[in-house]
Length: 82
Image 1 (cartoon, rainbow, N blue to C red):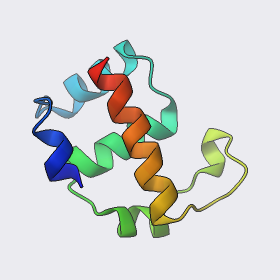
Image 2: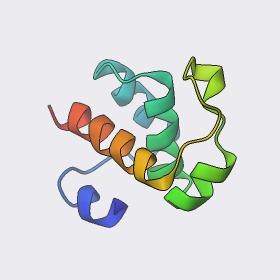
Image 3: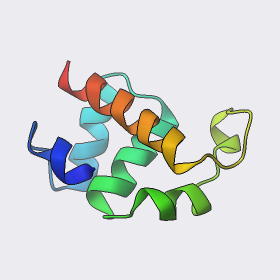
Image 4: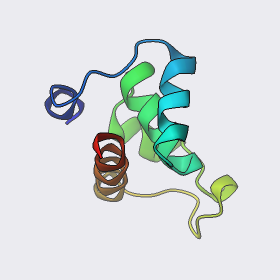
């Protein structure tokens, strides 16, 4: 999934500049972490779904499925494009 969306927009390779871009576009904390994990740490959605704790961002569940993470990722990427 990340390969297809990455071709739409070139993202910064530096972690700090990627975080800065996400904050400028108004992404939430969990959306920033998803973008960092996918594009900077090169983690898969399955790995993220087992290891990322969403309760620290105020979400009602601790873990989410790959399908939910895919939707969160699409929404975050749409915010980056617009």
